[in-house]
Every structure is written in C-alpha cells, then in structure tokens.
Image (tube, rainbow, N blue to C red; front, side):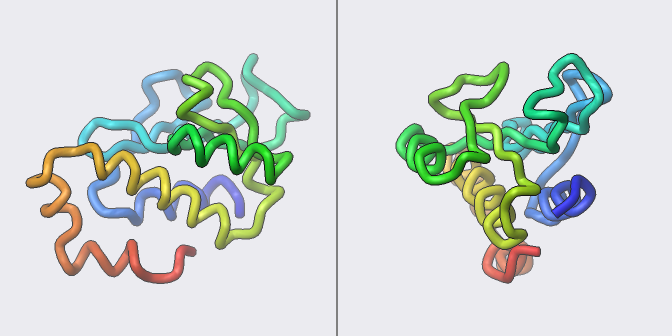
Length: 135
C-alpha cells in the first residue's frame, strides 16, 4: 500500500474526517473528533527508520504488545502514549493486514463513543464498508 491508498481507505470508513493539527507532514483521521489513525507523510525531523512510511494506530495495550512481538514493522509510537499507540511501517505488510489494523483501530475508538453516535455511524449503508473487503 502507498500513502494515498491508506488515506483513501481511512476516509472510506463511516464518519471519518481528516485534518493536520500537527503540521503539513502528518494527517490525522478522526471519528467524532477522536483520533484513530495518524499518517506520517515524511520529510521532517520525525524521519525515522530510513524515512519509511508509517502511521500510528490506537489499539488495546494487549493487542499492541502482541503485534510488536510478532512484527518487526510495528513499534511503540513516536510522540504518542506507547501503551495505547503503535507505529506501523505499512509498506512491509500486505494490503489486507494494513486495512484490517486500521479498521481495528477505528472500531476501538468507535466503541468508546456514545451509543447514539455508534448507531448513527453503523447504519446499514455504512456497515457495508466495515463488513466488506478492506481495500
């Protein structure tokens, strides 16, 4: 996957918005104002691991630990709470895995929102995006 494919997939999820509160080189994706994905565009002082593209996703502490143990391309997130956020060097993974992890982060953040908001975002038309193939 490339950066545009990651962006397109994130924006395809119900209710997602994007902004750049941390500068021109980082795009955040939110549900109801809550960040679930932070996509690094490169070319800044935060250039890590030879400039490889990466994003930060929010997952449960146990899931973060599991993914870090299983995949060298998953590391504690730079400038985020390392217990809840991981950096993913997504070009080292297959497209399906990347989309599944983005969706997992989305659903975790969605699960913390008020019930009325969850129901609105999970209406039948929106559900097809979540239930279908990722990318």
